[in-house]
Amino acid sequence: MTNAATISFSSSLSPTQWAFDRLFVLCGRAPRASQLAELNRAPGLLPLGADGYNNVKRILCAGSIFLSNPEDEESRCLLVDAQDRDTDCVSMGIEAHIVPDRDRFRGTAGILRDAAERLPDDARILVVSASEVVQSDLNSVFERLVAVDADVVLCRDSGGQPVGCWSIRAGNLRAVSPVGYSDFKEQVLPALAKTQKVKVVTISEKECVRHWLCDLPSYLHCIRSLAGFQSGPQVLMEPGVSIASDALVVDAVLLRGATVESGAVVARSAVVSGVRVRPGQRVIDRVWTDKA
Image (cartoon, rainbow, N blue to C red; front, side, top):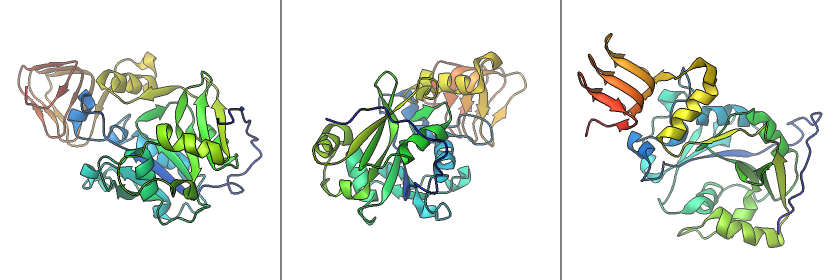
């Protein structure tokens, strides 16, 4: 059983005293049954605000502060789905080493084991899921992880639910099979808890307001929440988007190169990159792929 004692963080502790050697950002695809899968982009790379702001960028920016060698681009690794080998992260301004899965069915533990294969056993890895948006200050969450010296350090909220970031030493991934599916939470963690030093830090409710990018309503809710609900419904547009002057677009996301033509209505929806909403069409509560 893991030691679930709450650990407090001393603000006087400098990140240079305790640092991670690698930052692994898990950037898998949305579930196939989810509307977000139709956007053909990992949830963590979907826009959350203006100027190309997305969750991967947030995580890389905050996590880099706690790296032992932040100038080394390979210390920041974006672990992407095997079918996303051609993901154009450069055009999004993401500075990280792209590591595609060897196999689509490796599971979280398998993906981490493969990415950490060449690291020394004592290397400390910060692992963060890009599909979970922590609305509060990510730095305060990472501070609690970096301050704890253990083989595995997990995060939970005040209600006892796991938070999608944790740290682990590379050596603890060696036992994971180099082939096949391996889940971290169900298979690897229980075994590690029996033999290794595993600790859990609790993040207060105020510090841990979270959103899961699992479907279209949750994605749009996250955007509104980050912008502040008082500002009303948001419209996010990536470069190359065109909207006719008499079209109505509200509470929506238009990905790169999308076009909304004369008299069209787009509400509580997302439009796929390069797709046209034709004159007079109504797109409401859906992902528009132009296949309807």
